[in-house]
Image 1: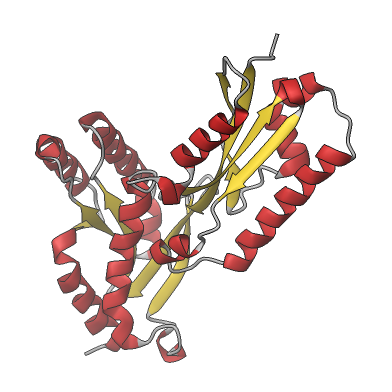
Image 2: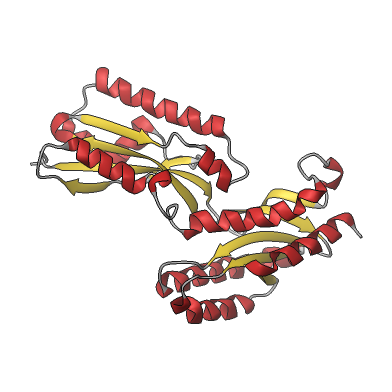
Length: 290
């Protein structure tokens, strides 16, 4: 019996696969006992643009309107077995609602829950408040909110160069520079600047919930830049990591361990958050060849 069950999936705006960044932007709920879909999403897209510089609001709105249109069609035209929509919810979304094709909007794996009364409005309200980012005190995690702000801080210091309009500096400053490893996987770095080497910039925030998450993130990045070492040597690259510190004193010991681990990497430079202004001035000087 599935009369007291429902499934839901979180719609995420995926800004960067390399950084693992995503923002919760909507929630899709399916109640099988009444064969009903509910799709709620954030109307406040300016919050995304406040965090990320490069966001196509038009593209996001197009995806959202297409999702709503397809759900309306299923409500009015299609007669699919309740069992198929429920038991194969992820496949159903992929095939009929939004393909899992690496686009900027993607649904998460489904989650199942139970209710013991018929008040679906309470369930809808609860899930919307829990997952939609403008309702959250901490916008779905530090890896979402702080890393883009760290990166934006660096880019704002470079605003004196008017990089969006000064095309004469295109050979000195890059956006969305891709590095491909030996297996063919691509990794995107949002900014890069030329000096004696091409410096590729990546923000990493260690302001996480607990020491295990912090350690896991350190190991993940250690593995990533170990894997990209050969590409750095061949193409004369350097990886500049803009590091955000944890606020909790309980994480300081693990944070120091993470820095020691990353400092072992070749062709990697650590820039703490408080030193970003000095680092930015170094980039400006190199770009202008002063």
